[in-house]
Image (cartoon, rainbow, N blue to C red; front, side, top):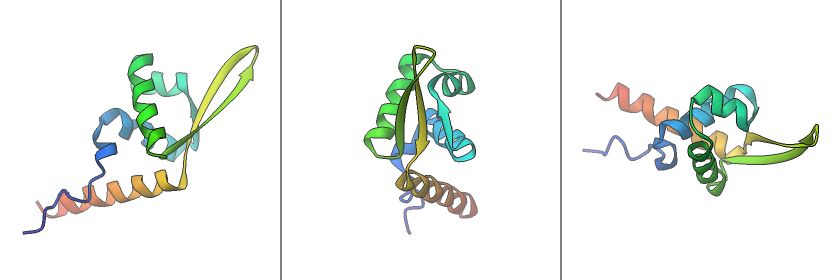
Length: 98
């Protein structure tokens, strides 16, 4: 029997990473504070998950100065969009095969 979970993306198994990706798919870009508030997580927790997504080249980071403060915005890369779509497709297949 084929392993029905083999196509799930290990990077996206975390609910926080999946949440970040979901927000970015809909919003195109989001800043750190927006992600933090929407996901109801701490700075450190969000930062570690963003770091994992960046390391895997699923998101890109753009920093700019707004009113003398650094603003960090995130968006999906093409490989991130593809990975997210593939993960959702794998979840759909998993549900259909149960």
